[in-house]
Image 1 (spheres, rainbow, N blue to C red):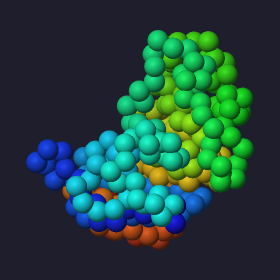
Image 2 (spheres, rainbow, N blue to C red):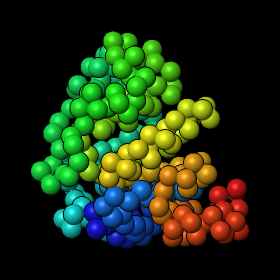
Image 3 (tube, helix red, strand yellow):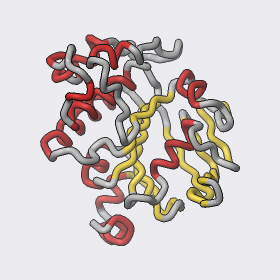
Image 4 (cartoon, helix red, strand yellow):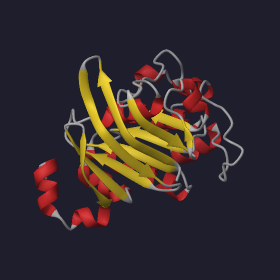
Length: 236
């Protein structure tokens, strides 16, 4: 198992956000976290990355405990986060945004390392915007740059936080196609989404969250056949 999260409880000050949350993801899987806004999806990512450490529970990567490690240490172990708010460097060019994030992958990594040239093959628009300031890109282009910048760190586990948030349908379709290409690369992906139809098309398994609890888990093929669950927990 690549990532195992067991019964974590995470707080913001006195506010209890995650309640005994457990999930797992195997190498090469794409797993989605589904739920309405504010149910704890981003907090799961922040817990994994050490940005908001859980007060209890366990988070294991390759079987090794990472709860309690610093975010930069977790990143060095091969976890890459694509944040919802993108956080690109607006005063750097597209190429500089990519160069600043570059590092080699782990020794046991089976796939070819990500380089600027390889990133350009996945996101051709970034080649065209190579010398453009990051802050002048459209929302969709900024999202592509954020994903590409994270890939330059050569993660073995990619955390995608609301990748389709605020994007036009045509751009969302492009992001979907790129995620499917990353799956073919063998990259392990954990993504959170409010857009359930988008998430189910790219994912192998799903977890549904409500008020910090996991209420359902299973294969996405099973979830598609249970419209009552989709309606009850996701309103779709």
